[in-house]
Length: 178
Length: 254
Image 1 (cartoon, rainbow over the protein chains, first blue to last red):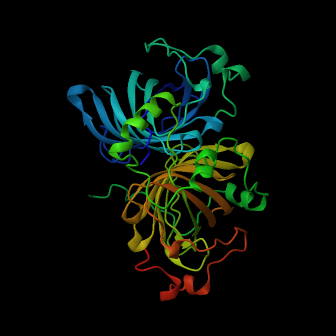
Image 2 (image 1 turned 90 degrees about the vertical axis):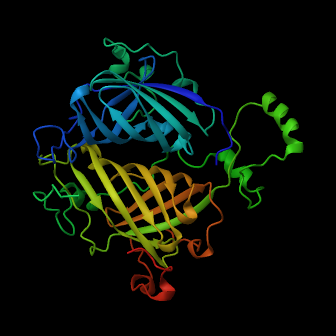
Image 3 (image 1 turned 90 degrees about the horizontal axis):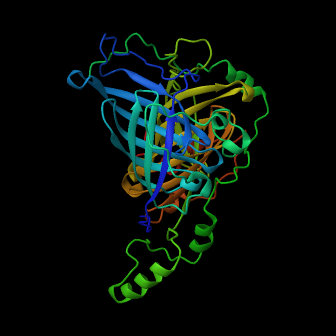
């Protein structure tokens, strides 16, 4: 068991810029409403919390669990990773509710995130295009300066800085995952 | 649970995406240097002085106050945990109907939407014993034309018979080595964490893994034989392939 209980916060924006063929909604239930059996692989871009640097991507899938008509949304079980270029990746698993915030479990990581534990808060800004994450990370060394920032407060109009969107060298981490 | 996938016929044995043939012919880069991937060096150098006891609960009550003040003064770094290396070979012997390439994207090239459930045989790193199987899923994320390969998100387990299992999650790139997260385990692997290096020898038939495991007791000698260095010609010993009693672990997973 990792001895360090120090919690480090990391903020990330996930943006679907509609240029990765994502999401791929597989209506395997073959029912007209979202139903158990539907699977949704996805992959979006991620930016540092201040939206000034492109970091990498998310990659994984959502398993539709239940449509919630009274809440006009759905419950998914999500299993995916966040890729941070040369730094490594963080793997997560947990609930994705299209109608409210949720906490997912951090199941592990690689690179600087090797041995990581903790949880991550998922805050949806604009379904399903903009999501703001706050990671509460334990069990790893000090995060590099480059990943830490004063995050931009989430609101519907947030956009990545033009230089970050263009992945200009100063606005992207080394070998950002693409 | 009623199956709703009757319209999906998993393609038996091998149905490799067309890129795979090009990949077999092209030269693989065995391992691209990963600046940050690999062992946390501070933990490697410190484990040599570690005893074999687990690192949980290191403080006695008399030492508590000393350590409390030391901790407040010292910079925060996680206390290094003992790392155990475990080597295994994953071999697709084409007798488990794996992989099952589900072209759910319905596009001619590998695309987001395609899913690839799979299960292969697992051998100890010295290739002397059959230990079990892998089992899980690869989610196609994107085709990478400039690398003549694909990125998958892989979620699967390694089964070690009566010993238990290890679960992993992370990137599988058909064109280079990767590190996956060890998300947990059962049996002797209960509480396991760390990362595992995936080294592809022959796509997608032979893979070599190096686990860097923390949080568990000493691994049994049976799993710690001197590993055979990976090469395209590696094969399990005849006894292991035939799962003879001395060539397999107790109740190896099948």
